[in-house]
Image (tube, rainbow, N blue to C red):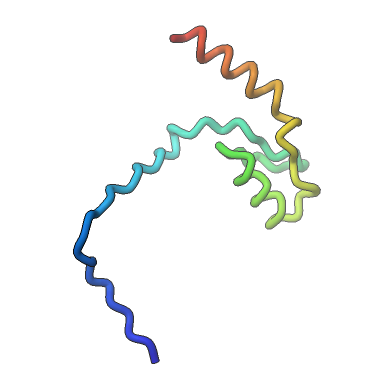
Length: 79
């Protein structure tokens, strides 16, 4: 039987990177399954959704190439 200790160890502690809030995530990657309104901030998260919900084959980065290019252009114009 293992005993687990949750006491912090001595040594340098690193601060965690803060998570983005729900409203801060740019949801570029949308599920194209009929009647599914889910969208995600990363292609990896979209593909996890597609796999778990059995919404067809995984999406490929090439499908979103033009979208990402367009959004990068818009961001550079704003700055």
